[in-house]
Length: 414
Image 1 (cartoon, rainbow, N blue to C red):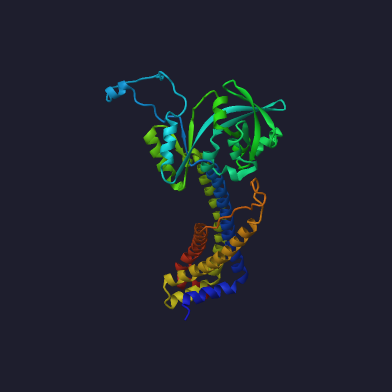
Image 2: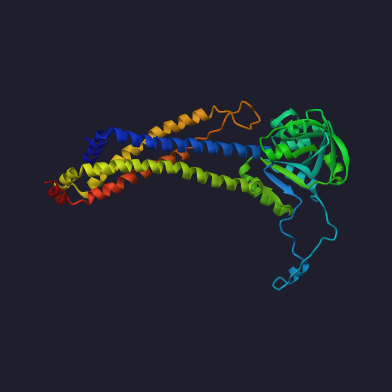
């Protein structure tokens, strides 16, 4: 048997079918847009992060030191008021000292791969124009273990640097600006004053403009020669089987060898903070649609309360408690919210299915489509906001109806 408050609530909704349908459509639209737009943004973020994480190492060890070592005077008098400034090392050393031993030790650790790198600035010249780029001198065999750049190659390969010491691998954006293709020869000048020529042996496209237009790869030995830094390595790139270990592994490396080790979360902290702000804007914007839908529910129930004032007075006079009156109108709002929520799930899934057929702009593979991630959290959050808005919008006029003096209403009606 249907409980009395539920029976009355359904009767009210059936009597105002058009307004009920409009309110359900409002909730449906809010939930559907919330789910689809949130899924699209999460898909974009996951794609962007995967491009960053897969193309770049998980931990980068550089020849920098986070904090200068304490001076002997500070160690001798730790509690004294000592100020030391303008301290310079007697024999400054450039590069990672003991890089070979560090690489061997890292290679022996399970679930970890490491590759040496010499980063430096370089100017490429072609057709009378100069292009300033960052050059990474790499060991192709080891570098392929710490990056997935090989899968982003449009022409040639990164492995070609092992057979062509004078080779260079450039990004698609830089190649387009220079008008360079596979096999072309480029003039090169470095900050060390050296000049030479390099032949393009590969062109990659990661979808990240900074890399595609401003970063090139050359053989490690050739880079050391052009930069005037023989046998010097200023970066070690580390890749992990479990990316979730990047922070503790970086801390371990830094604590053991003293050189700065930055996990990818630190390297791209600014991008991650932008994602947090982006999510807050998306959730608040799409969530506001659900709040607006709540006003439609408020309008329906407020109208019903005014129209059914005499009925409410009669029910109160025959003994229905205030809580029963409140339950009637809250159930009405809940029914509208649940119907709109379920319809919104279907709408959100449908919009996501359509978005998944749209080509992804800037992707290395022309056949790649937009990524839309429909997570359970998005469904739960959108549903929670919808139901909260519906119940809240119904509770306000329901509370007013429950407080009505039935005797005053009956007297006014007579």
